[in-house]
Image 1 (cartoon, rainbow, N blue to C red):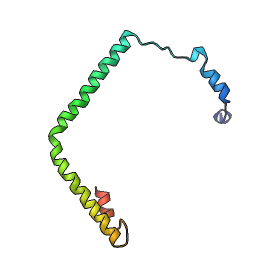
Image 2: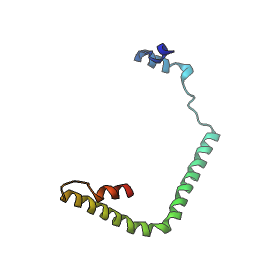
Image 3: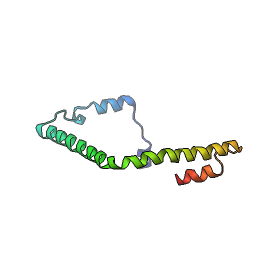
Image 4: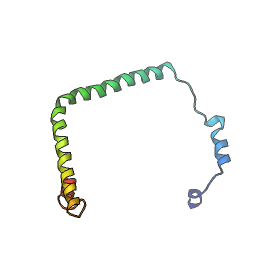
Length: 98
């Protein structure tokens, strides 16, 4: 088994093996496959648009608190840099919380 684990093939052998007719995939889509692709696209688009509609009522609060959190993190990081230890002290604590 160990011999098969480290066995190698030449690139020419791999290309010839992949080009063999019995290893080729059938390149046709029938009416059932095309219908399934169309239905999947419609359902997938509907799922993503519904989640966006459901989340639309919650965006105002998060759009206000995100800049505040970013400001606090940047302020602590800047304070650590001014004190001579970049990222030290409160900046590390806040980075674990946020």
